[in-house]
Length: 103
Image (cartoon, rainbow, N blue to C red):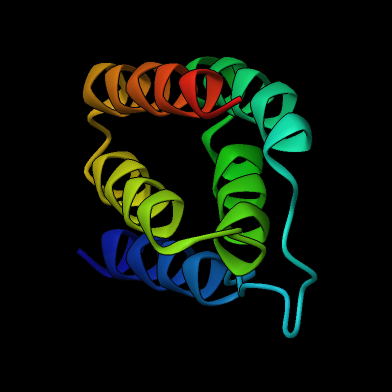
């Protein structure tokens, strides 16, 4: 039992040491034409590196160009937080379609 307690404490210490992803303060709004390739990168990251995906999502949310995009990015982040990768990918695709039709 003592060994298990030590392992648990070690795991808790490691979790405490993880960096919390914070959105960039005062980020300049990103243009729609810049957003599309970043969303493609986000899609790839969601499937391969959730930590990096969270960081990119935080950056995109901080630089959201409008309310509709901010709402979509918040929904994507909520799916990612729940490890609902397929739902996040579907929302990214819908956002890309929406941005493409805006021109």
